[in-house]
Amino acid sequence: MNGDKTRKPLFTPRSSGLGWTLNPEHPVSWVVMTGVIAVIIYSAFR
Image 1: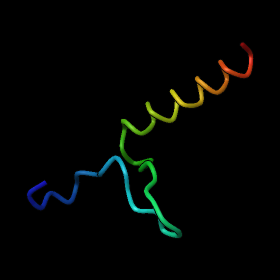
Image 2 (image 1 turned 90 degrees about the vertical axis):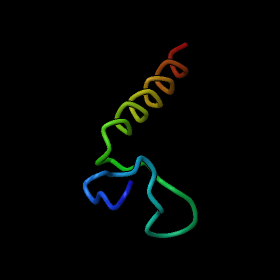
Image 3 (image 1 turned 180 degrees about the horizontal axis):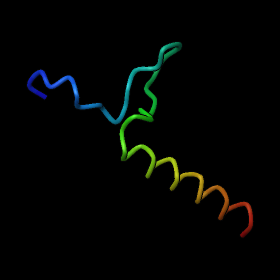
């Protein structure tokens, strides 16, 4: 934290509406999104 502007947060405020969204510039967000898609595909073909 400490003023480091290069560190990107995992969640960012949405540009419109209420709430938060995953930041696609954060590497962990891709893991989370891939996991969610994998669960959806698994559930669809189960």
